[in-house]
Image: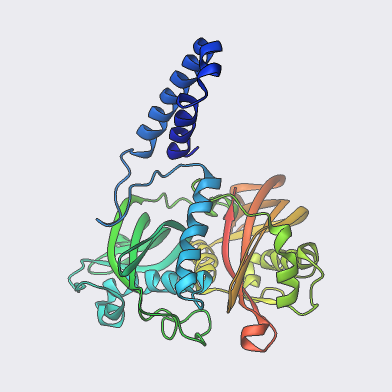
Length: 400
């Protein structure tokens, strides 16, 4: 609940008609006291110890009412699009994710010049660590605001990567998990291009956005023990905003695809479900490299490839069998002038395990079926913008 909203309630109650107060003074007094106490609790909650992403960003709790957070984000995006009609949140997050990966990998390779144009401060090549196999687990909008001539966006990345201390030997390598908040800024006088580059490119769409600061919230060394794949799948962030009423957006979705889909349920039936199933067929033999009617984003390809390669390097094999989907629905949809993103919630059962070269189970179970709920997101340029059939890219894969 909004603290300002509570303050308004207090004001209305205190400024109520005198006759009502006279008749119900005790009840009103108790109500006012209760509201004031609740407001005080919420104020304390909102001003917690969350670390700032940059000096221009208002403090924001990691856990807040998801509906209010979504309203705040939608308002921020609307304010940007009011001045920049071609701004694309889908395109911006794609650009930021690619920059995140290239930044971390360039530090280890001492090639920061390639990403330097996208930073407002001088990058250093003096890192003693080599980062590779970067996998972004989730990207969340943490804050959006405008101050005078500048727009600020904070993205929170949850990611993991293979870290090696120089000299880069396999003996010293380990998997590291990090949460980082990146502060992007752009002058309000700049606008997005009329025709952006396709997804998966740093050039042509977000050249005017610069990284102002990188705040490392946490960094933890991960356990390297072999695990079944779905045990390694990143969780849906608790701070993610609640999905909108996507049924209200079906008409827009159908118009973008010119009759290819009759609605979100038709998309689930024709694309989301068969694509999801195709990822796990012949999983141990990298059958996920060619999903049904879709392509993998570089990030999802890295996630699946790393899991497979890490096990195969120690003569282990990941297995996913008997996968059966028993419920699927679209939970979120975002569309703008150029791109769209659609998220489906999938509930399914399967066996998920790891076996060695002799067929012995070393993790998971080949007989016990797991019940799992996952979210899979697809991104694509829509037909109206690029005058061609959309090719969906699997951009995110998370579990509840």
